[in-house]
Image (cartoon, rainbow, N blue to C red; front, side, top):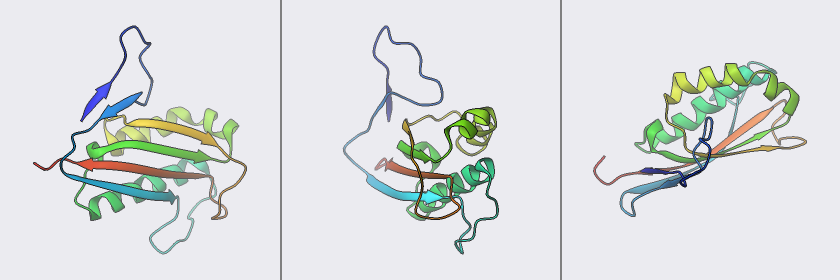
Amino acid sequence: METLHPDGWAAPIGYANGIKVPNSGHTIYIAGQVGWSADQVFASEDLVPQFEQALKNVLAVLAAGGGKPEHICRMTAYCCDKPQYLAVRKQLGGIWREHMGKHFPAMSMIFVSDLLDHPGLIELEATAVIPADS
């Protein structure tokens, strides 16, 4: 995969503007994952632990398909609480680095009024490309 960054643009923080992927290998589309356990139970109603669990869930689905965090090329986050998100951004960054390292896919953050699974506050969906030589 190649990170795309147009000349003259300011560096993005915590995401990539675009990712170019080869046409070989396998593509994995990961449905929206919320911050609940494998048995669909929320351990917390707080954003930080829900984000970490949702990210772990994305990575578990990816691993089931033979993928690794660095294969994620796109991720979309849906969050119900913008003020809380902004207040804990630094903590979320630490969780990101713990599980994803310094790999930043093309990302979008969308703030929504609610999620289907209550008391979910954040949902993450992703696309990954596993190169043929992996």
